[in-house]
Length: 115
Image (cartoon, rainbow, N blue to C red; front, side, top):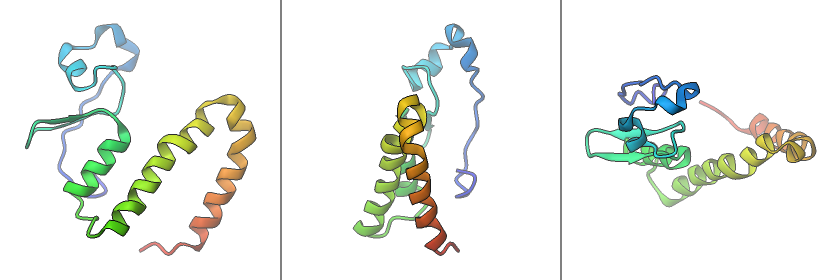
């Protein structure tokens, strides 16, 4: 949000004190995990990182102007939340898949022009 200059209030949540979560936070994320977003401008509450990223890009960052851009953004969000996450956090997958995925990502991003 900072990178896109979207105004926000950061609230520090102590995950180690899980048993002491305030009920108000569990209303934002009933699973007691991060991230979570509460948009006071319209009352929307989101607790899934991919949904948060899609919502912010569609409604605040003015990045999506057409279906092609929307699909490209969705592709990378879904890749990160499924393929990459499983590779990073499942030990047997990490050893087998991580080098290949990182190699492919490196190939893609060394050829991509950033502005």
